[in-house]
Image (cartoon, rainbow, N blue to C red; front, side):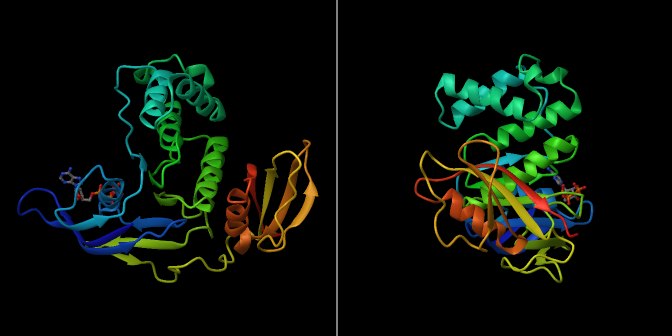
Length: 285
Ligand SMILES: Nc1ncnc2c1ncn2[C@@H]1O[C@H](COP(=O)(O)OP(=O)(O)OP(=O)(O)O)[C@@H](O)[C@H]1O
């Protein structure tokens, strides 16, 4: 996916919020977008998500996209379960599968009890869980997250972190804005700064995946489950330490942080693929 000479202004003669933006988003990339209030971060994310169009320039090669907006339109006249089921149908699932997926995502976020609650009656936190769940349903090739962690409880923030890592390892592009400077620290392939209409690499941020910053985690622990009778693929990136985990076919793999994404990718793309149960960071001692 590529942005070429993209500009956006609101209204004829309005100021340019973004100007001459050139940006490539390769598969399996994780981009963090930063900038002062009102600098144009959400504008950039809306253009990337395809819900807004550039005033000038081109956006090409956009894959199937999911978007978690800064403000979720909670006034839709339906229940959380019905809303997510409808989204699942849009993603191509059959009725029964969409309804199962809707409940599954609500349960994973600890909000299964609110499946029958109208969206307009949900608390802010639960409403945000629904907003995030709709973005994670299906397998978007691009996931755009505008402050998606805000309002989530700790467990749900961890689940979203884990899902982002999994999606990126599986080849999706993820672009996010978050006020927490530590969000997915060390995992982002690039940090972009929106300033004066330009989108620039933040000083010190690498455009390509590189070694994790000293502030990032030192390692990563992945619990993965193989298909019956499967053995781990040979030559896994980072030569992970492997131990049996709880459960018949599960193993725990521990690897240095710079190799975690490559390891996840190798597991997810193995033939047959391994199921990733959890991904946790191992902090510096
Ligand atoms: N639909 C719109 N119509 C007119 N102006 C808009 C519109 N959307 C955004 N703007 C203006 O564009 C500028 C950039 O807004 P944007 O929401 O993209 O910034 P942001 O960096 O995401 O801000 P924040 O950090 O406060 O969320 C602001 O001056 C804003 O007022």
